Length: 264
Ligand SMILES: C[S@@+](CC[C@H](N)C(=O)[O-])C[C@H]1O[C@@H](n2cnc3c(N)ncnc32)[C@H](O)[C@@H]1O
Image 1 (cartoon, rainbow, N blue to C red):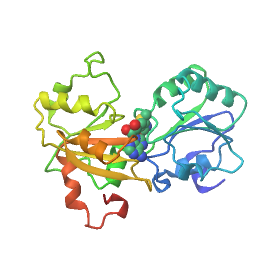
Image 2 (image 1 turned 90 degrees about the horizontal axis):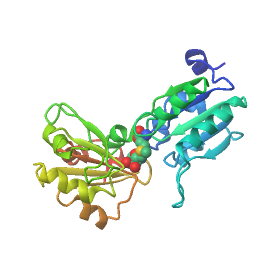
Image 3 (image 1 turned 135 degrees about the vertical axis):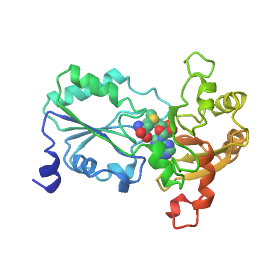
């Protein structure tokens, strides 16, 4: 028994731990995530779990990739959940490791519901979500008293023809910064929709690619030019896009003692 096991309970055989791996930097893992990595028999991990995080796993642990790779279709969600159930029923300590927080745009909720239905004991370990921790790693505060009283975390991976029911005008009217996940490919549609709804074209936009990793890159631009500037800079997913005054605060913070990774 180590201190973490004493405090939080053992990782029992036949159980699943649904764990957030944070945005990529292993220094941003929780103690429970590290404990799970060093105890699990099988690790079922997603594409956004960084190699540096996986390197902390027990060498004997079996690793199963459950994400999208090389343009191949990703495994169906139901298949992943069934695999977790199968592994747990075989008596393994199953670590389901997901980027960021498992319950934020990660389908962890669906997996947890599947485990409940199958009567498989499980534990949820939150992680630092990219939309908050990833921005912080790039020197962008999600809130300041002078800029905003709310933030909106939302997915940009959606139909922009209205069929998904996202009312961009309603979000624009709140005046709150939008922090978008999975939005890179839809940015050419999202930005005009927000501008048409009254958001100023010169509203600051920050795009943070691979936040908190060695490959982190940040671009601060405007809503009107964000897509073209991202293309010109060669930015690709995974990225967080922050739209609003908070994006403009990065410049004021850079050089004031931030981690070097927060620099452009
Ligand atoms: C399926 S969602 C998973 C979100 C994750 N559960 C979380 O809480 O951060 C994947 C999206 O998260 C964002 N993302 C995750 N990790 C990131 C990182 N290190 N840097 C930038 N964006 C990231 C990107 O928008 C990516 O397309």
